[in-house]
Image 1: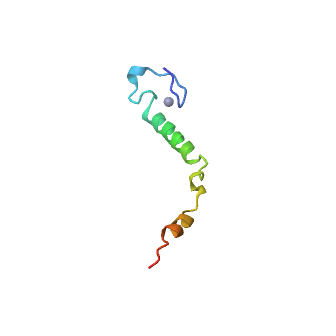
Image 2: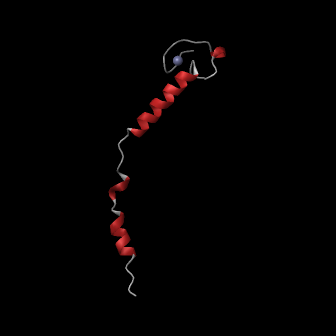
Image 3: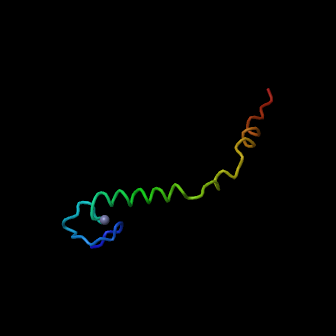
Length: 62
Ligand SMILES: [Zn+2]
């Protein structure tokens, strides 16, 4: 089998971190995956201004 991180061929029965050849390669793949998720562009959800909704909601006439 080939490790998806370092692309080295290894024996499946010797690996304790399937489908990676070693726990290190598993960590590298996980960090790379998390890094890609963090670097994704965000801000589409903050299109609405929460203050305009708040002022309209607190329109109490005591
Ligand atoms: Zn590897």
